[in-house]
Structures are given as structure tokens and as C-alpha cells.
Image (cartoon, rainbow, N blue to C red):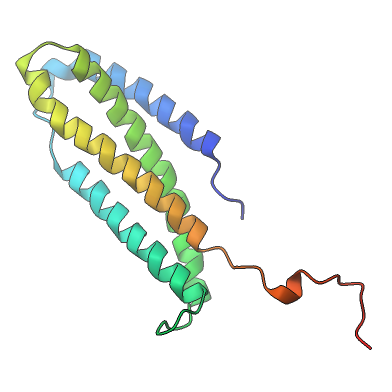
Length: 155
């Protein structure tokens, strides 16, 4: 399995930013006040994945006081990290489109919605960072015997 490519995340974020800009520019008048629940959810996921990254890396490195890691759990964390990185990039792009549009507007309603949209952007960016960290933490370190030349025989 390959690591998540930064270019994939950037393209997803840019596409979502365009969609976010189009949605808010066409339907802002009919939209309710921006909720804080998605922001809190994205932030909670980022905290969970950051903690999982710390814990998993310590268990893979077999630091003192840490139990051995379950390989199936690591595989699940990798899948979670890859999915969260992409979802976080999409949310970050969408919120970036919203924030840019709201920042340009000079209305009180747009000013009132800007903190929730900015918080969503920050939480989504934190989720992307935590997901990439978790994915990196799940890598198995190179063992010394892996670096030896396989053609050499021990007599």
C-alpha cells in the first residue's frame, strides 16, 4: 500500500473549494446559521488520530511499558488515516471556499458565520495533519538484518 500523495489531497481540496464557493454564493440567502457541530467533530477526530499516532508509534518501536502492537489494528489505522486524510482535505477545501466568500462579503450575517467557517477550516486542516501523522506512524521500521546483502552467506 502506498502512502497518501500530497497531490491527491491538494486536488481534492481545490475541487471542494470550488464547490463550496459555488454553493455559498448561490444559496447563502436561504442557508441557516453555520453550525459548530462539524467543526467539533473534525477536531475530535484529529485529536483521536493524533493520540493513536503517538500510541501506535510507541508500540511499534516497543518502548518501555508499551504492549506489542496488534498488526490488524495497525492495518485498520492505516485505512482510517488514508480515508481521514482525503475527507479532511475535502472538508478543508470546502471550508476554505466558504471562508473566502464570507471574508469578501461586507454583511453582518457573513461576519457572524465567519468564525464557524474558520474553525471548520482549522479543524479540517488539523485532521489532515493528524491523519498523515497516523499513516506515517504505522510504518514498520527497518530491521538491521533487512539492510544486509541477501547474496552473502554466513559460513
